[in-house]
Length: 83
Image (spheres, one colour):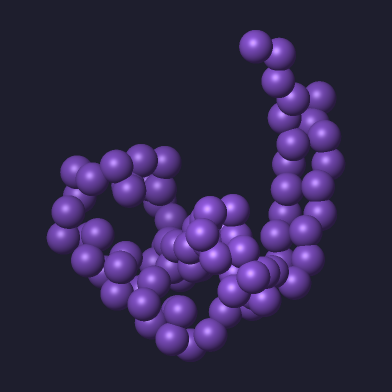
């Protein structure tokens, strides 16, 4: 299969409630160090993990089951094809 690589940067906004929910999720994951969640996340700060979780939830909602609701949090998207 021939595929292309695209680098995309999203600018999102989020609420305090979304931040608290993501922080609670990351705190819970700390109790389970062997979960798949931790792959590739070595050395990241708690704030990085929380923001990644927020972005993941917003973008998965956009592409899966809540495109209109998730779309309100996506402020901008920039993409470029990588060689």
